[in-house]
Image (cartoon, rainbow, N blue to C red):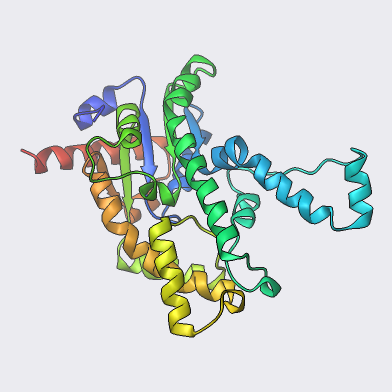
Length: 290
């Protein structure tokens, strides 16, 4: 780890962290808070994916739909209008809308193989975006003069690294760049995330082996053909299983960093609070390894 103790962390003139864990436990909230403090650069992986590596896919998909409308088709063909996505740190809907959900086209579903193509596009984009972390950490200080750097990773980071492989190239790049910080939820948090997802199911990226197995199992249980599957019903059914699938992966990643609890993160009100929280986590880790 790039910081060996809480004291070393507190005394560091340049602080760099990467936050990871389930979506909805406070990664972006804390990252926004740090950015607003004025001395932290906020590098959002989801934003980087949507703008740096999947922006063209997103825009082309919107154009494809617009081309089906004669009025818009004529304007597009004459370069009279421009279509693009307006992704922000807090509005990633263009990206999630492009990823989509598999199932009945009458309910907005995609053919499963088209869905898997988009999943693979996201996998590659997430890897490339995470590989950009060292460059953006340098850019933060060299270009903008921010002494501190927070990488706000997506919930699927654990799907694109092998947390049990000490030679995993991507994970090693991240560990060498920033302190890995797992925001860990408990059973109550998991239940709340499932309830929240059930109210408003959204597209997600999943490990392809896990996803294909889930698709076959779900269709086996329901007896539905691919174009009969309710997209929202499938992603609801898959979500809780995905959280269970990811938990040991997060835990393995955390062995190369520190762990903080979601309730602790919820109590952070300032950059100073966050710095003390990380110092305490480093001290806990140090005492556990004595």
